[in-house]
Image 1 (cartoon, one colour):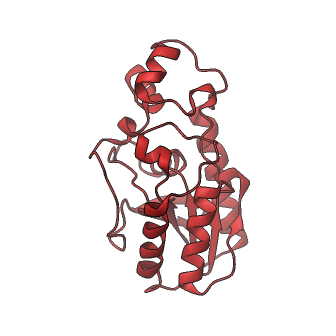
Image 2 (image 1 turned 180 degrees about the vertical axis):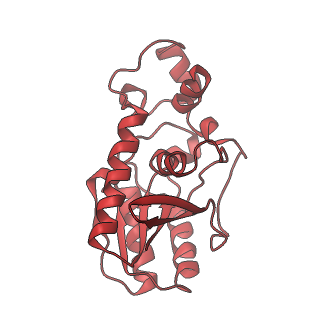
Length: 211
């Protein structure tokens, strides 16, 4: 069995301002760096075999801070752990999105949810095959982790995926199973507004209303 511990990156200024990030490469702010360091202290109570990360700087810096705390090598960058591409909506707030692209209007360049799920689940399967019987920390993004949660446990969790939260999964006989959403090893999940997941991102909220 391979176990995955999916971590959302630390806070960025766009998180704080509630702007859609997607593949825009926004770095951690000081709060995000502090969150990553605190998470590293928590994870250092456990043993891990590998740390992998999205190539975006907010995830990669989070992973590097955690790796340093764990005394592990630099994280392995995995391109398909990158955040969902929200196309021309990136950089917008919810109000700006409604002005630029009213409900029902297609957002140019937006990646389909199904495509996110396909690439991320495939990546985790490949990692499990290459690293059997391993415990792997994977630092990624809200929509990426949400895709895996929905794949493994459809409809069970609508809670927010907060900065530096941990979500654990097992990979057994080719199947991904959710072990713990907001794993109890994580005590530093910063939830500024106590929203459901879809309310963290106005594109996700709009799609949820459409079904």
